Image (tube, one colour):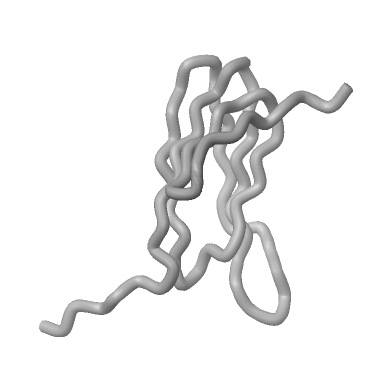
Length: 78
């Protein structure tokens, strides 16, 4: 069985600092579309991966995001 290499297989870790953090996966291709969403409560962690289907991940709410490039905090809209 041939093992496929996943394109852009970087992982990110998202930790919710508050209840109700939204994490939305966006598709690749000519038309970008939502393909998956999750709601996280305070303290919950989601490990996400960029794949051949996922080109972007949108995070809405107060969360800490860890990537191979470093760490960043998302913030609530004021």
